[in-house]
Length: 409
Image (cartoon, rainbow, N blue to C red; front, side, top):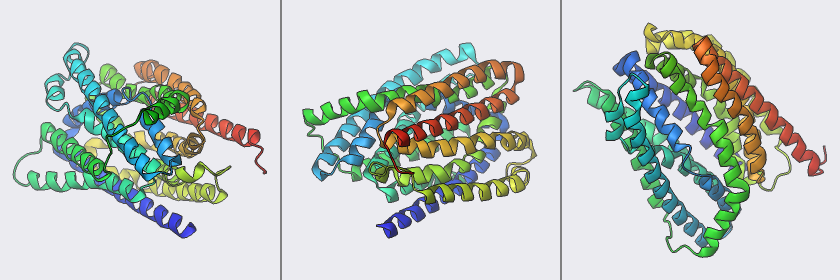
């Protein structure tokens, strides 16, 4: 059993490392071919799409994840995958409608005038919803190899196709949107077909999902609205109070800092199914997470300026200073996510909701008031404060769980 777990850890970390490398290559490629202004426009559209995608699921994908994690029957599993397919279609349609409505409102509040492109590439919403939801249910199914594939294949496919096209014609914002999310959506649909959903769904499966969603998925969803969806306010506020070029800088800094989330988050994903039956997080998981994070942080501070100037050009040098401070928030959030996975496996959705509500309040206040008066510094401060609070609350709830479960220490 341990050998199998170590193998899956190796696969996930290998795929995550490859995904990080490919992600950096894509960000380098896009930032160079688009330039700071168009790259900022791309990130603005992406921010809007991710914000809308985060509000339409109502927690059902999270609920399906836990149901699949505790399910033992393969036939019932296929029915839940069929149910997932129906819900994916419904939420995608709702998300597309909201995205198109926003496209008509956008010119009245922002100066970027990107409404026409948003309407043309409406399927971005379905791709983002599908990607997030697919990773969730694959986690519940414990299909680690497929998770790795979904993380890597769309990025690799985009990079190869876009590079070869760039040899013959200039890469535009439209082409980036089409290739990035067209390839991603294609991969999601292929994986979904391979899972062989059974659409002969019984009332008992729907009832179980609704029950799980009421006590676990929906509270986490409400928390997600507060803790995750509110992070997208940063892109809107920076665009409104500053400009889309600064949106691009901030979002690129988020991309560069995101690998520090990978180590504890990957371990949380791998052990999610085991967490259902474990009473505490194994000590080796802590040690490995901390040691790996420290090593990664040393490398990060040593190379960040060289990486920005060498690969992104000096036009993106402000991203270096943003990243040096933003990385602190990512470290806090990464370890908070590890505890989050454990508590989520235990069905403590209300606790996760409460934590997200608290961080959401910080996000809303910080990404509006702080950015208005402190510009980019306000966005950085908000990220650090929100992530620090998130970690503290996760530690408190984890200790509370151990005490109330009478776990020997």
